[in-house]
Structures are given as structure tokens and as C-alpha cells.
Image (tube, rainbow over all chains, first blue to last red; front, top):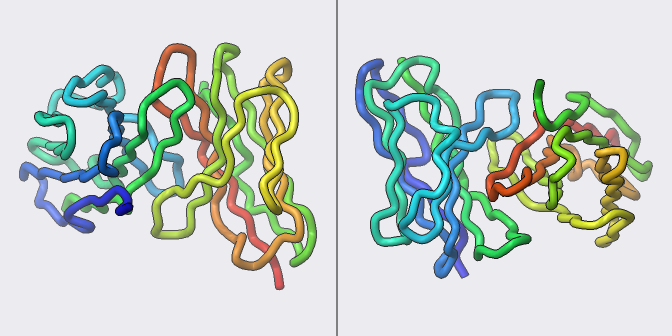
Length: 114
Length: 111
């Protein structure tokens, strides 16, 4: 089946703008994760959903970051009042759920804040 | 202190050689261990997963896990130029579903 999809693929925002990043997980996948990847670094965890429930948001860097998954499928990561340090690739991953779950990554959204 | 450590490289090997990539982690309770490959400008792609001590082989790839030493490695046999990429080690910490990644090791396979 289709993999994880994300949109937009690229986003340029002026500092202070709000942005919304969308993730469509693999159909039927219960778990959904958001990661942030800075240049030259490994991805860093932001938040995790199991169905519509946000079970872990310990990685969100500030209250400007907000994520939702209202119907347990598509998820949106919203960043309010963007700052230059928010420039990064935002990766979404999904998995079937279960103890030894493999996470499959989408292509990412590259965000540049000017 | 970063929880997952990798040598950033680059690790340069000739075509046909064995590439050895290493990773250490700090959480003794970690249960699941993964190697992802990431080409420049692309997203991480799963290569191997390993959950118990010992070796796990899949084609040219072998993952090795030693929980006592908190060490996981990836061997790539008969390295090809197409293996040139950044290899990310990732672990799930005790009681969490999130992956903690190392910074990655850049592998260069010279033709």
C-alpha cells in the first residue's frame, strides 16, 4: 500500500508566521510520531499519538508547537509565531502498534523560517 | 549527555570491503534497536531491527547487539557505492514508544 505522505514538502515562512504541516500515515497504522531533524543531526522526537490520543508530547520544544490527530488518522503539526530556530525537516512516522513496532517515515517537510 | 552515541565519520571503505558501524546507548532498559539508512535529502529508511543479544543477518547486513556492553553494531558486507549514506542508530527507551536517534555515521564507499 501507499507509504506515509506529508505536505507541503517545502515551506518558507517569515518569522512570526504560523505554519501547519500535515501527515497522512499508512492506512490502518495506530501509532503516529513527529520528529524534528536539524541539519547534520539525527531526528529528535516531538510527540506521539495512539489513535487520536496524544500519549507523549515530551519532545515539543515550546508551547508554540501543537499537534493533533482528531480522527485517529491524519495528523497536523502546527507551529505558531515561527522563529528562525524552527528551521528544520519535520518527519512523520507511523507504525502498526505493539511492543516491537517498526516506524516507517514519510518524506518530511523542510521548513525554512526567514 | 546524548543517549545514543555514534561516530560521525565519514567512514570510508573501498568497494567490496566490510563496513563496520558502531553505536552505544545509555539506557540499560532499552528494548528495541534499529538501524536506519538516510540518503542526503531523503527520509530515514529501516535497514535492520534487533531485539535480543547476538547477531541477526539479512542479506549483506548483520546487526549485532550486546546489552551488557550497551553496544549495537551494523556490518555491511561487500559494500557498494550505493551504500554510501548516513546510517542512523535508534533505540526505544524503557517504557516509551519514541525512538532516540544517534547523530548518524556517514559512510562513503569508494569505487
